[in-house]
Image (cartoon, rainbow, N blue to C red; front, top):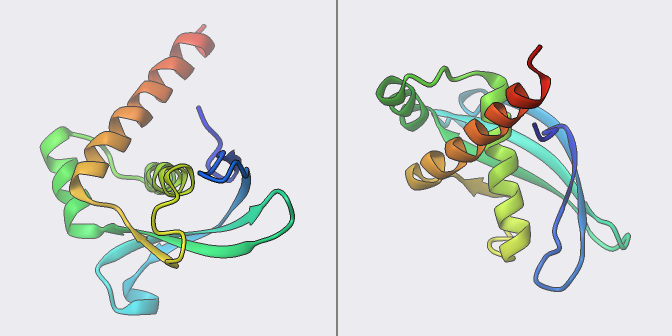
Length: 129
């Protein structure tokens, strides 16, 4: 399974790779009065040029509904992996790189959860006794 705390991203549309470090996960209500889970990463261009904070925003009502509908247990680790998926998509596609807050849509929740389930199944397959 991918490490969501310290990982490489890219290349971006300009051929650059990026290094991402997990900084924090907290509820948005505590800092922005938002009913969300905010996951912050520090990203740095591996060429040494650019460094930025990116906060991936997961709507609490949307992930709660997703969990009820699918049976997925919503954990901090799951939220962090969802955020890593969003950050990866942002870097690779070059979309919204100018934004500090990256919002995960309901469609992306479905898409990223499928990727996470695939990683989990692969990990179990290769590490099961």
